[in-house]
Image (cartoon, rainbow, N blue to C red):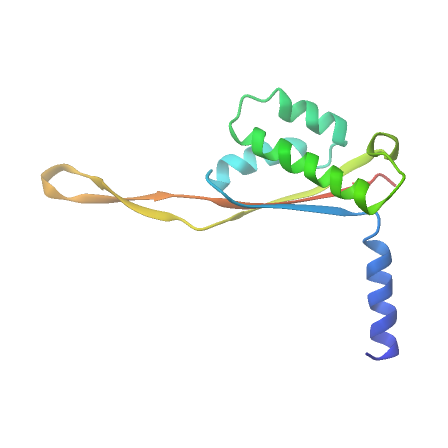
Length: 131
């Protein structure tokens, strides 16, 4: 590796020390429903985001709450000796992408069939310290 690439890689590695990432794949919920819940917590502090998710009536909020707890645990594992409560963590970004769709047939009138798409999604969540 050249000197310039090594310096850039070291700078990226240093910048990622305060960031923790958690991913959730193949969640059997449509991406639109998951995005509606993800929009509620984007940019919020972790404590407030957990409160929002805990008291939300949406089904997707349970999965996102677990994912957020996982991201906080990843941050604590990365920064040994520091607690997430004292660090003032913020949900930096939440990305919801479309996953695989299961194609099923639904009976329709006059001997026909409609295609039903059971959608899934992939979620990636990034937690960072508030600077």
